[in-house]
Length: 486
Image (tube, rainbow, N blue to C red; front, side, top):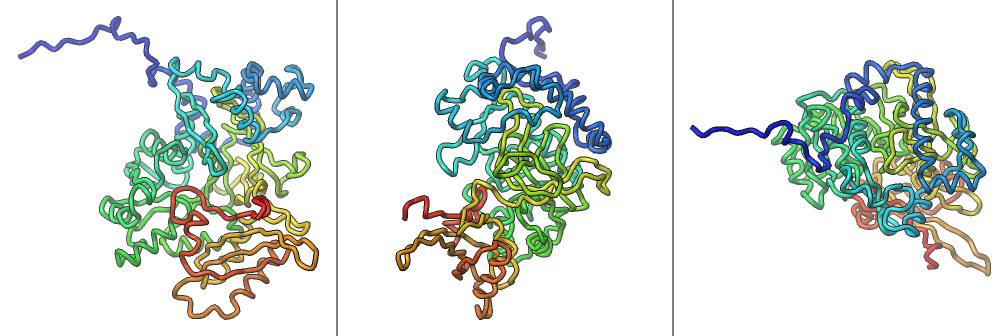
């Protein structure tokens, strides 16, 4: 037999930035409990307990952020000094900023901007992960994650999974690629690191064809799916037409999705009927993973308030609005240090509708469906129009596929200039007729949007390319040709 030698403890000290050594795990899990502990403790705190936690963590964040040149310049320009911020109640004194401000900062101070206080200096001293925004309007915006940020990315998603009923031994399939985009990684870490769930990281339809996605789901026992509604609808169609099977045969426990402005739950009902299981809505951001999720009551998205302060402000004035009033969501992430996020206007339109204790036992405030994005809003003959607000009308008639695309134009007639919008709506191949459909949709859209728009009926599949349907990432709903000068 060979002698087995081991490395003595004194020789095991390493100068490398080993990930497992970069976090005090006991302290981390004490502050941000794992899903089952979270569900029976922090998730059930009173509103006063939550506010006290936010206050303590916010003040610690502020002490750190005064050393960040991006914030110090902005706050000093606004006449704010460190002594002016004494509690979380003073957060409204701080100016908001948007992703455009980060892009400008990174353009002026490449590659990561002053907002990343260490810049490239931190790389090599502590593990870092780089993720980016979608980059749909140009170069993607880079965000560095330190170990705490990276763990919270997965832990936040795991909390939602647990409260919705996921348990160790489940098999979750995620048709999103683990790339520079954040979604795939969130789900993987949640399942693998925090839930004892087998993650099937099949990637998008580009990486793995939809038919194979389904073949693997049946073969390997997938019982939870997470994806965007458009792709889930596409998968059900592929299953029916190419496999000759019904996705309900999978007997899923539930679907995780992002229902957007499905205010009358038409989209939810359609997915639940098609897949034969509950559908839970979610809200997430590139900067923090999962920020809000539905519990089994499906009555608003619980905001993860021990980790983030959420505010809603008026789109035009930036002033805070009360419960039930629609405005832009402003977020402050309490655990971020590598790239602090303090009062970032993410320009998502929401309402915080519920401030009472939910039947599930949580006092965390609940927001309504994501109603759209204010930066996608277009002014049409003096009326603010949000393309995502077309969803209820488009879903109101079973002859449509539920897909639409808005085109805004500026036309001149009789010497006068007039802004117009056409909503292209897909019609199912098996629709018996199109009689009255155009007129029905135009009436409904007029009611919902507050301005008349034209409807153009197109064949099923015609919008796949322009609206980014059946592919990875969010669908596109607007082309404003007025901005293009066409």
